[in-house]
Image (cartoon, rainbow, N blue to C red; front, top):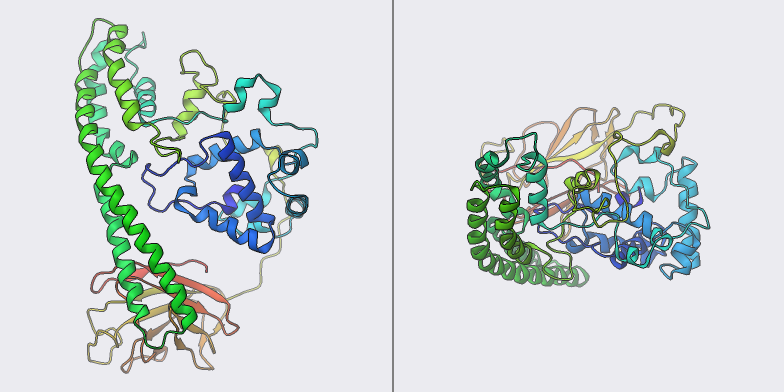
Length: 487
Protein backbone atom coordinates (compact mmCIF):
# COMPACT_ATOMS: atom_id res chain seq x y z
CA UNK A 1 0.00 0.00 0.00
CA UNK A 2 2.74 2.46 0.96
CA UNK A 3 4.92 1.83 -2.08
CA UNK A 4 1.89 2.03 -4.36
CA UNK A 5 1.12 5.44 -2.84
CA UNK A 6 4.54 7.03 -3.34
CA UNK A 7 6.03 5.24 -6.36
CA UNK A 8 5.71 6.45 -9.95
CA UNK A 9 5.26 4.31 -13.07
CA UNK A 10 7.69 5.01 -15.93
CA UNK A 11 5.39 6.39 -18.62
CA UNK A 12 7.75 5.36 -21.44
CA UNK A 13 8.50 1.95 -19.93
CA UNK A 14 10.36 -0.19 -22.45
CA UNK A 15 12.12 -2.78 -20.31
CA UNK A 16 15.38 -0.88 -20.57
CA UNK A 17 14.43 0.92 -17.39
CA UNK A 18 16.74 -0.10 -14.53
CA UNK A 19 15.60 -2.39 -11.72
CA UNK A 20 16.54 0.09 -9.00
CA UNK A 21 15.94 -2.32 -6.09
CA UNK A 22 18.35 -4.95 -7.38
CA UNK A 23 20.18 -5.66 -4.09
CA UNK A 24 19.14 -5.90 -0.41
CA UNK A 25 20.84 -2.57 0.36
CA UNK A 26 18.91 -0.87 -2.44
CA UNK A 27 15.66 -2.36 -1.15
CA UNK A 28 16.43 -0.89 2.27
CA UNK A 29 17.03 2.51 0.65
CA UNK A 30 13.63 2.21 -1.06
CA UNK A 31 12.06 1.55 2.34
CA UNK A 32 13.80 4.57 3.85
CA UNK A 33 12.61 6.84 1.06
CA UNK A 34 9.09 5.41 1.29
CA UNK A 35 8.84 6.09 5.04
CA UNK A 36 10.16 9.64 4.56
CA UNK A 37 7.73 10.25 1.69
CA UNK A 38 4.85 9.23 3.96
CA UNK A 39 5.91 10.61 7.36
CA UNK A 40 9.09 12.66 7.03
CA UNK A 41 9.52 16.27 8.04
CA UNK A 42 8.20 18.59 5.28
CA UNK A 43 11.58 19.11 3.62
CA UNK A 44 12.55 15.44 3.85
CA UNK A 45 9.08 14.39 2.68
CA UNK A 46 9.30 16.61 -0.40
CA UNK A 47 12.78 15.29 -1.24
CA UNK A 48 11.69 11.66 -0.81
CA UNK A 49 8.64 12.08 -3.02
CA UNK A 50 10.84 13.71 -5.66
CA UNK A 51 13.25 10.73 -5.34
CA UNK A 52 10.51 8.39 -6.57
CA UNK A 53 9.88 10.60 -9.63
CA UNK A 54 13.43 10.21 -10.93
CA UNK A 55 13.59 7.92 -13.95
CA UNK A 56 16.06 5.54 -12.29
CA UNK A 57 13.75 5.08 -9.27
CA UNK A 58 10.43 4.67 -11.06
CA UNK A 59 8.71 1.32 -10.50
CA UNK A 60 6.79 -0.65 -13.11
CA UNK A 61 3.91 -2.95 -12.18
CA UNK A 62 5.69 -6.29 -11.64
CA UNK A 63 8.60 -4.47 -10.01
CA UNK A 64 6.16 -3.08 -7.42
CA UNK A 65 5.41 -6.64 -6.28
CA UNK A 66 9.15 -7.37 -6.18
CA UNK A 67 10.00 -4.25 -4.15
CA UNK A 68 7.09 -4.62 -1.72
CA UNK A 69 7.67 -8.32 -1.08
CA UNK A 70 11.43 -7.93 -0.69
CA UNK A 71 10.94 -4.94 1.62
CA UNK A 72 8.51 -6.89 3.79
CA UNK A 73 11.01 -9.72 4.19
CA UNK A 74 14.13 -7.59 4.68
CA UNK A 75 12.80 -4.63 6.70
CA UNK A 76 10.06 -5.38 9.25
CA UNK A 77 7.92 -2.31 9.98
CA UNK A 78 8.91 -2.10 13.65
CA UNK A 79 11.40 -0.09 15.72
CA UNK A 80 14.20 -2.59 15.18
CA UNK A 81 13.67 -2.68 11.44
CA UNK A 82 13.47 1.09 10.92
CA UNK A 83 15.12 2.91 13.85
CA UNK A 84 17.71 0.49 15.27
CA UNK A 85 18.86 -0.27 11.71
CA UNK A 86 19.55 3.43 11.16
CA UNK A 87 17.08 3.88 8.29
CA UNK A 88 15.03 6.63 9.98
CA UNK A 89 15.03 8.49 13.29
CA UNK A 90 12.66 7.88 16.19
CA UNK A 91 10.44 10.88 15.40
CA UNK A 92 9.91 9.79 11.79
CA UNK A 93 9.19 6.23 12.89
CA UNK A 94 6.60 7.46 15.40
CA UNK A 95 4.85 9.57 12.78
CA UNK A 96 4.87 6.64 10.34
CA UNK A 97 3.31 4.28 12.89
CA UNK A 98 0.72 6.96 13.65
CA UNK A 99 -0.15 7.11 9.94
CA UNK A 100 -0.60 3.32 9.88
CA UNK A 101 -2.90 3.47 12.90
CA UNK A 102 -4.93 6.32 11.40
CA UNK A 103 -5.28 4.37 8.15
CA UNK A 104 -6.56 1.32 10.02
CA UNK A 105 -9.14 3.55 11.75
CA UNK A 106 -10.44 4.47 8.31
CA UNK A 107 -9.04 8.02 8.33
CA UNK A 108 -7.60 9.75 5.28
CA UNK A 109 -3.78 9.53 5.25
CA UNK A 110 -1.03 9.80 2.62
CA UNK A 111 -1.48 6.05 2.11
CA UNK A 112 -4.84 6.79 0.49
CA UNK A 113 -4.48 10.43 -0.56
CA UNK A 114 -1.45 9.59 -2.75
CA UNK A 115 -2.82 6.22 -3.88
CA UNK A 116 -4.45 5.75 -7.29
CA UNK A 117 -6.03 2.50 -6.07
CA UNK A 118 -9.28 3.45 -4.33
CA UNK A 119 -9.41 0.00 -2.70
CA UNK A 120 -6.25 0.72 -0.69
CA UNK A 121 -8.38 2.06 2.17
CA UNK A 122 -9.65 -1.46 2.84
CA UNK A 123 -6.20 -3.03 3.32
CA UNK A 124 -4.96 -3.52 6.89
CA UNK A 125 -1.48 -1.99 7.35
CA UNK A 126 -0.82 -2.88 11.00
CA UNK A 127 2.88 -2.62 11.94
CA UNK A 128 4.94 -5.77 12.46
CA UNK A 129 5.39 -7.36 15.92
CA UNK A 130 8.26 -5.84 17.88
CA UNK A 131 10.27 -9.09 17.91
CA UNK A 132 10.00 -9.82 14.18
CA UNK A 133 13.42 -9.86 12.50
CA UNK A 134 14.44 -9.72 8.83
CA UNK A 135 13.86 -13.12 7.24
CA UNK A 136 17.55 -13.74 6.37
CA UNK A 137 18.46 -13.56 10.08
CA UNK A 138 16.55 -16.82 10.62
CA UNK A 139 18.64 -18.66 8.00
CA UNK A 140 22.27 -19.16 7.07
CA UNK A 141 24.68 -16.41 6.00
CA UNK A 142 23.96 -16.90 2.31
CA UNK A 143 20.38 -15.70 2.76
CA UNK A 144 21.55 -12.13 3.45
CA UNK A 145 22.36 -11.54 -0.23
CA UNK A 146 18.97 -12.68 -1.50
CA UNK A 147 15.84 -10.76 -2.42
CA UNK A 148 12.30 -12.13 -2.30
CA UNK A 149 12.68 -13.21 -5.93
CA UNK A 150 15.93 -13.32 -7.89
CA UNK A 151 15.93 -10.75 -10.73
CA UNK A 152 16.22 -12.27 -14.19
CA UNK A 153 18.09 -11.29 -17.32
CA UNK A 154 16.21 -11.16 -20.62
CA UNK A 155 17.95 -14.37 -21.67
CA UNK A 156 16.57 -16.20 -18.63
CA UNK A 157 13.08 -14.81 -19.28
CA UNK A 158 13.04 -16.06 -22.87
CA UNK A 159 14.57 -19.39 -21.88
CA UNK A 160 11.93 -19.83 -19.18
CA UNK A 161 9.15 -18.91 -21.61
CA UNK A 162 10.24 -21.50 -24.14
CA UNK A 163 10.68 -24.16 -21.43
CA UNK A 164 7.23 -23.48 -20.03
CA UNK A 165 5.14 -22.98 -23.15
CA UNK A 166 6.96 -25.06 -25.79
CA UNK A 167 8.79 -27.73 -23.73
CA UNK A 168 10.79 -29.85 -26.16
CA UNK A 169 12.12 -31.90 -23.20
CA UNK A 170 8.62 -32.85 -21.94
CA UNK A 171 8.05 -36.60 -22.56
CA UNK A 172 4.37 -35.87 -23.18
CA UNK A 173 5.27 -33.66 -26.16
CA UNK A 174 6.92 -34.48 -29.49
CA UNK A 175 10.47 -33.63 -28.41
CA UNK A 176 12.87 -32.31 -31.04
CA UNK A 177 10.04 -32.00 -33.55
CA UNK A 178 9.13 -28.81 -31.67
CA UNK A 179 12.36 -27.14 -32.81
CA UNK A 180 10.86 -25.27 -35.81
CA UNK A 181 7.99 -24.00 -33.65
CA UNK A 182 10.35 -22.72 -30.95
CA UNK A 183 12.44 -20.93 -33.57
CA UNK A 184 9.39 -19.37 -35.23
CA UNK A 185 8.05 -18.10 -31.91
CA UNK A 186 11.44 -16.68 -30.96
CA UNK A 187 11.70 -14.88 -34.31
CA UNK A 188 8.23 -13.38 -33.81
CA UNK A 189 9.29 -12.15 -30.37
CA UNK A 190 12.28 -10.24 -31.74
CA UNK A 191 10.77 -6.71 -31.94
CA UNK A 192 9.39 -6.90 -28.41
CA UNK A 193 12.60 -8.37 -27.02
CA UNK A 194 14.76 -5.67 -28.54
CA UNK A 195 12.45 -3.01 -27.13
CA UNK A 196 12.48 -4.71 -23.72
CA UNK A 197 16.28 -4.77 -23.72
CA UNK A 198 16.39 -1.03 -24.35
CA UNK A 199 17.60 -1.46 -27.95
CA UNK A 200 14.68 0.36 -29.54
CA UNK A 201 16.07 3.11 -31.80
CA UNK A 202 12.71 4.92 -32.21
CA UNK A 203 12.31 5.13 -28.44
CA UNK A 204 15.61 6.91 -27.85
CA UNK A 205 15.08 9.06 -30.92
CA UNK A 206 11.73 10.14 -29.45
CA UNK A 207 13.50 10.98 -26.18
CA UNK A 208 15.95 13.16 -28.12
CA UNK A 209 13.09 14.85 -29.99
CA UNK A 210 11.14 15.44 -26.78
CA UNK A 211 14.13 17.03 -25.05
CA UNK A 212 14.78 19.32 -28.00
CA UNK A 213 11.11 20.34 -28.09
CA UNK A 214 11.09 21.08 -24.37
CA UNK A 215 14.22 23.20 -24.63
CA UNK A 216 12.71 25.17 -27.51
CA UNK A 217 9.46 25.70 -25.59
CA UNK A 218 11.27 26.84 -22.46
CA UNK A 219 13.37 29.23 -24.50
CA UNK A 220 10.18 30.79 -25.85
CA UNK A 221 8.97 31.32 -22.28
CA UNK A 222 12.35 32.79 -21.28
CA UNK A 223 12.08 35.30 -24.12
CA UNK A 224 8.91 36.77 -22.59
CA UNK A 225 9.80 40.36 -21.56
CA UNK A 226 7.22 40.23 -18.75
CA UNK A 227 8.91 37.27 -17.07
CA UNK A 228 9.70 37.97 -13.41
CA UNK A 229 13.22 37.12 -12.11
CA UNK A 230 12.11 34.28 -9.82
CA UNK A 231 10.24 32.53 -12.60
CA UNK A 232 13.17 33.12 -14.95
CA UNK A 233 15.46 31.32 -12.53
CA UNK A 234 13.05 28.36 -12.37
CA UNK A 235 12.77 28.14 -16.15
CA UNK A 236 16.54 28.39 -16.62
CA UNK A 237 17.02 25.51 -14.18
CA UNK A 238 14.38 23.46 -16.00
CA UNK A 239 16.02 24.21 -19.35
CA UNK A 240 19.40 23.14 -17.96
CA UNK A 241 17.86 19.88 -16.77
CA UNK A 242 16.38 19.22 -20.23
CA UNK A 243 19.75 19.96 -21.85
CA UNK A 244 21.24 17.35 -19.52
CA UNK A 245 18.52 14.88 -20.55
CA UNK A 246 19.17 15.64 -24.21
CA UNK A 247 22.85 14.82 -23.80
CA UNK A 248 22.02 11.56 -22.02
CA UNK A 249 19.44 10.57 -24.65
CA UNK A 250 21.85 11.25 -27.52
CA UNK A 251 24.53 9.17 -25.77
CA UNK A 252 22.03 6.35 -25.18
CA UNK A 253 20.98 6.41 -28.82
CA UNK A 254 24.59 6.09 -29.98
CA UNK A 255 25.26 3.28 -27.49
CA UNK A 256 22.11 1.40 -28.51
CA UNK A 257 23.03 1.49 -32.18
CA UNK A 258 26.51 0.16 -31.40
CA UNK A 259 25.29 -2.67 -29.13
CA UNK A 260 22.45 -3.63 -31.44
CA UNK A 261 24.79 -4.77 -34.22
CA UNK A 262 26.28 -7.52 -32.05
CA UNK A 263 22.93 -8.53 -30.62
CA UNK A 264 21.42 -8.85 -34.13
CA UNK A 265 24.11 -11.37 -35.06
CA UNK A 266 23.71 -13.31 -31.82
CA UNK A 267 19.93 -13.42 -32.18
CA UNK A 268 20.22 -14.89 -35.67
CA UNK A 269 22.53 -17.60 -34.28
CA UNK A 270 19.97 -18.36 -31.56
CA UNK A 271 17.14 -18.78 -34.06
CA UNK A 272 19.27 -21.04 -36.23
CA UNK A 273 20.42 -23.22 -33.29
CA UNK A 274 16.98 -23.49 -31.68
CA UNK A 275 15.35 -24.32 -35.02
CA UNK A 276 17.62 -27.32 -35.61
CA UNK A 277 16.57 -30.82 -34.48
CA UNK A 278 19.19 -32.71 -32.43
CA UNK A 279 19.68 -36.30 -31.37
CA UNK A 280 18.15 -35.56 -27.98
CA UNK A 281 17.49 -32.70 -25.56
CA UNK A 282 20.93 -33.00 -23.96
CA UNK A 283 22.60 -32.45 -27.34
CA UNK A 284 20.39 -29.41 -27.93
CA UNK A 285 21.35 -27.88 -24.57
CA UNK A 286 25.02 -28.53 -25.29
CA UNK A 287 24.76 -26.68 -28.62
CA UNK A 288 22.89 -23.82 -26.95
CA UNK A 289 25.25 -23.38 -23.98
CA UNK A 290 27.92 -21.14 -25.61
CA UNK A 291 25.25 -18.88 -27.11
CA UNK A 292 23.58 -18.52 -23.70
CA UNK A 293 26.89 -17.59 -22.10
CA UNK A 294 27.50 -14.88 -24.70
CA UNK A 295 23.92 -13.62 -24.44
CA UNK A 296 24.13 -13.27 -20.66
CA UNK A 297 27.15 -11.04 -21.14
CA UNK A 298 25.37 -8.83 -23.69
CA UNK A 299 21.89 -8.73 -22.19
CA UNK A 300 22.68 -9.06 -18.50
CA UNK A 301 23.04 -6.24 -15.97
CA UNK A 302 25.12 -3.53 -17.60
CA UNK A 303 26.09 -1.54 -14.50
CA UNK A 304 25.24 -0.97 -10.85
CA UNK A 305 21.99 0.80 -11.79
CA UNK A 306 20.12 -2.49 -12.29
CA UNK A 307 19.68 -1.97 -16.05
CA UNK A 308 19.37 -5.39 -17.68
CA UNK A 309 17.62 -6.96 -14.66
CA UNK A 310 13.88 -7.70 -14.72
CA UNK A 311 11.24 -9.14 -12.40
CA UNK A 312 8.38 -10.00 -14.78
CA UNK A 313 5.27 -11.91 -13.64
CA UNK A 314 6.72 -14.97 -15.38
CA UNK A 315 9.48 -15.03 -12.74
CA UNK A 316 6.85 -16.00 -10.17
CA UNK A 317 5.74 -18.88 -12.41
CA UNK A 318 9.32 -20.14 -12.62
CA UNK A 319 9.51 -20.16 -8.81
CA UNK A 320 6.13 -21.87 -8.44
CA UNK A 321 7.19 -24.52 -10.96
CA UNK A 322 10.60 -24.87 -9.22
CA UNK A 323 12.03 -24.74 -12.74
CA UNK A 324 15.47 -23.53 -11.60
CA UNK A 325 17.89 -26.44 -11.76
CA UNK A 326 17.05 -27.94 -8.37
CA UNK A 327 16.68 -24.70 -6.37
CA UNK A 328 13.05 -24.70 -5.18
CA UNK A 329 13.32 -20.96 -4.44
CA UNK A 330 15.12 -20.08 -7.69
CA UNK A 331 17.70 -17.94 -5.91
CA UNK A 332 15.17 -15.97 -3.87
CA UNK A 333 14.18 -15.89 -0.21
CA UNK A 334 10.85 -17.65 -0.66
CA UNK A 335 9.28 -20.42 -2.70
CA UNK A 336 5.80 -20.33 -4.21
CA UNK A 337 2.92 -22.74 -4.79
CA UNK A 338 -0.17 -22.31 -6.94
CA UNK A 339 -3.11 -21.85 -4.54
CA UNK A 340 -5.37 -19.23 -6.18
CA UNK A 341 -5.35 -15.50 -6.69
CA UNK A 342 -6.46 -12.23 -5.11
CA UNK A 343 -6.06 -10.81 -1.61
CA UNK A 344 -6.98 -13.05 1.33
CA UNK A 345 -9.99 -11.90 3.36
CA UNK A 346 -7.83 -11.70 6.50
CA UNK A 347 -5.84 -8.90 4.86
CA UNK A 348 -8.76 -6.56 4.27
CA UNK A 349 -11.06 -4.56 6.48
CA UNK A 350 -14.77 -4.36 5.71
CA UNK A 351 -16.08 -0.88 6.44
CA UNK A 352 -19.66 0.22 6.76
CA UNK A 353 -20.98 1.66 3.53
CA UNK A 354 -20.58 5.45 3.87
CA UNK A 355 -23.45 7.76 2.92
CA UNK A 356 -23.27 9.09 -0.63
CA UNK A 357 -21.39 12.39 -0.91
CA UNK A 358 -23.41 15.55 -1.53
CA UNK A 359 -23.68 16.73 -5.14
CA UNK A 360 -20.54 18.54 -6.23
CA UNK A 361 -19.10 19.98 -9.43
CA UNK A 362 -16.12 18.29 -11.08
CA UNK A 363 -14.49 20.78 -13.44
CA UNK A 364 -11.66 19.57 -15.66
CA UNK A 365 -9.63 20.81 -18.61
CA UNK A 366 -11.27 18.65 -21.27
CA UNK A 367 -9.40 19.80 -24.38
CA UNK A 368 -6.80 22.27 -25.63
CA UNK A 369 -5.85 23.17 -29.20
CA UNK A 370 -2.44 24.92 -29.08
CA UNK A 371 -1.99 24.99 -32.87
CA UNK A 372 -5.39 25.56 -34.52
CA UNK A 373 -5.99 24.92 -38.21
CA UNK A 374 -9.52 26.33 -38.47
CA UNK A 375 -11.87 29.05 -37.21
CA UNK A 376 -12.57 27.45 -33.83
CA UNK A 377 -14.09 30.50 -32.12
CA UNK A 378 -16.73 30.79 -34.84
CA UNK A 379 -16.25 34.50 -35.54
CA UNK A 380 -15.81 33.93 -39.27
CA UNK A 381 -12.08 34.67 -39.33
CA UNK A 382 -9.22 32.22 -38.87
CA UNK A 383 -6.31 33.46 -36.79
CA UNK A 384 -3.65 31.11 -35.42
CA UNK A 385 -3.58 32.98 -32.08
CA UNK A 386 -7.24 34.01 -31.70
CA UNK A 387 -8.40 30.45 -32.46
CA UNK A 388 -6.23 28.79 -29.81
CA UNK A 389 -8.76 27.18 -27.52
CA UNK A 390 -9.28 25.55 -24.14
CA UNK A 391 -12.48 23.70 -23.25
CA UNK A 392 -13.54 23.06 -19.65
CA UNK A 393 -16.09 20.40 -18.73
CA UNK A 394 -18.23 19.97 -15.61
CA UNK A 395 -18.52 16.21 -15.14
CA UNK A 396 -19.99 16.52 -11.65
CA UNK A 397 -23.60 16.61 -10.50
CA UNK A 398 -23.79 20.21 -9.26
CA UNK A 399 -23.24 23.66 -10.82
CA UNK A 400 -19.80 25.29 -10.58
CA UNK A 401 -19.35 29.02 -9.95
CA UNK A 402 -16.33 29.92 -12.12
CA UNK A 403 -16.18 33.57 -11.05
CA UNK A 404 -12.55 34.44 -10.27
CA UNK A 405 -11.18 31.11 -11.59
CA UNK A 406 -8.02 31.40 -13.70
CA UNK A 407 -6.13 29.59 -16.45
CA UNK A 408 -2.34 29.91 -16.24
CA UNK A 409 0.63 28.48 -18.12
CA UNK A 410 4.18 28.18 -16.81
CA UNK A 411 4.70 31.92 -17.21
CA UNK A 412 1.59 33.77 -16.02
CA UNK A 413 -2.21 33.86 -15.71
CA UNK A 414 -3.71 33.88 -19.20
CA UNK A 415 -7.42 34.27 -18.41
CA UNK A 416 -9.65 35.09 -15.43
CA UNK A 417 -13.33 34.16 -15.53
CA UNK A 418 -15.67 37.08 -14.81
CA UNK A 419 -18.07 36.96 -11.89
CA UNK A 420 -21.41 35.28 -12.47
CA UNK A 421 -20.23 32.46 -14.76
CA UNK A 422 -22.20 29.42 -13.58
CA UNK A 423 -21.33 26.14 -15.26
CA UNK A 424 -24.12 23.57 -15.09
CA UNK A 425 -23.45 19.81 -14.79
CA UNK A 426 -22.74 18.13 -18.10
CA UNK A 427 -21.86 21.39 -19.89
CA UNK A 428 -18.69 22.89 -21.32
CA UNK A 429 -17.14 26.35 -21.43
CA UNK A 430 -14.73 27.51 -24.13
CA UNK A 431 -11.89 30.01 -23.78
CA UNK A 432 -10.25 31.29 -26.96
CA UNK A 433 -7.13 33.29 -27.66
CA UNK A 434 -9.09 36.25 -28.98
CA UNK A 435 -11.52 37.41 -31.63
CA UNK A 436 -15.28 37.42 -31.03
CA UNK A 437 -16.21 33.87 -29.94
CA UNK A 438 -19.74 32.79 -30.82
CA UNK A 439 -21.94 31.37 -28.05
CA UNK A 440 -23.11 32.32 -24.56
CA UNK A 441 -20.44 30.27 -22.78
CA UNK A 442 -17.41 31.10 -24.92
CA UNK A 443 -14.88 33.73 -23.86
CA UNK A 444 -11.92 35.57 -25.41
CA UNK A 445 -8.76 35.67 -23.30
CA UNK A 446 -6.90 38.31 -25.26
CA UNK A 447 -3.92 35.96 -25.55
CA UNK A 448 -3.74 32.33 -24.40
CA UNK A 449 -0.12 31.89 -25.52
CA UNK A 450 -0.33 28.10 -25.81
CA UNK A 451 3.04 26.79 -27.01
CA UNK A 452 2.68 24.19 -29.75
CA UNK A 453 6.13 22.78 -28.90
CA UNK A 454 4.99 21.90 -25.38
CA UNK A 455 3.40 23.66 -22.45
CA UNK A 456 1.58 23.20 -19.14
CA UNK A 457 -1.85 24.71 -18.48
CA UNK A 458 -3.31 24.80 -14.95
CA UNK A 459 -6.85 25.66 -13.84
CA UNK A 460 -7.10 27.41 -10.45
CA UNK A 461 -10.24 28.14 -8.43
CA UNK A 462 -11.00 31.55 -6.93
CA UNK A 463 -8.95 30.70 -3.80
CA UNK A 464 -5.89 29.81 -5.87
CA UNK A 465 -6.18 26.02 -5.47
CA UNK A 466 -5.06 23.94 -8.47
CA UNK A 467 -8.13 22.14 -9.82
CA UNK A 468 -6.75 20.45 -12.93
CA UNK A 469 -3.64 20.45 -15.08
CA UNK A 470 -2.95 19.63 -18.72
CA UNK A 471 0.57 19.10 -20.05
CA UNK A 472 1.66 18.34 -23.61
CA UNK A 473 4.70 18.05 -25.82
CA UNK A 474 5.02 19.00 -29.50
CA UNK A 475 1.65 18.98 -31.31
CA UNK A 476 0.72 18.94 -34.99
CA UNK A 477 -1.41 21.58 -36.68
CA UNK A 478 -5.06 21.10 -35.73
CA UNK A 479 -4.23 18.48 -33.08
CA UNK A 480 -6.27 18.44 -29.88
CA UNK A 481 -4.76 17.56 -26.51
CA UNK A 482 -7.01 15.64 -24.11
CA UNK A 483 -6.49 14.74 -20.48
CA UNK A 484 -8.76 14.51 -17.48
CA UNK A 485 -6.94 14.29 -14.15
CA UNK A 486 -6.14 16.01 -10.92
CA UNK A 487 -3.48 18.60 -10.16
